[in-house]
Length: 151
Ligand SMILES: [Zn+2]
View 1 (spheres, helix red, strand yellow):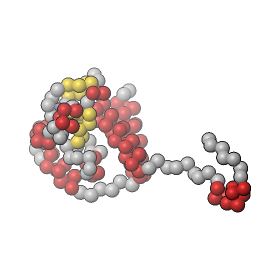
View 2 (view 1 turned 90 degrees about the vertical axis):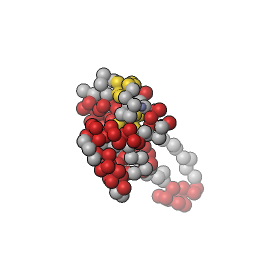
View 3 (view 1 turned 30 degrees about the horizontal axis):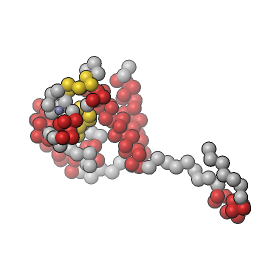
View 4 (view 1 turned 135 degrees about the vertical axis):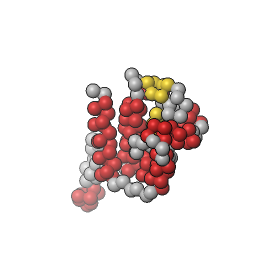
């Protein structure tokens, strides 16, 4: 806690000079926190004995060395935390090959059925706005899911 010296101004300003209420975390911080917990959840959910398979090249990596790759870009909020849209993906595919979208689409249709990739493309076009409360609820949800998976 920061103690401020009592001074004349404080007397003049009265209550207004009292220290402000603790600042709420900014929205971008909350989004960042959700991204982090969601990424770990996705990798944990798909891991077998701590090892994940890249969804587009099939190579295997430890959880810590693989990323959570989005089929539809993270800029689309409607699919940003959609479990169908996010899978373990190696840095080479995710970053250097721009997500290997064609391979990703084939993987999705092969795994979840024909038309999955198309429906995610559709969903990504929808505008979805999450309230701060909803974002916090998602963080809570995925923290619980992670606990459940690590039991
Ligand atoms: Zn890969």
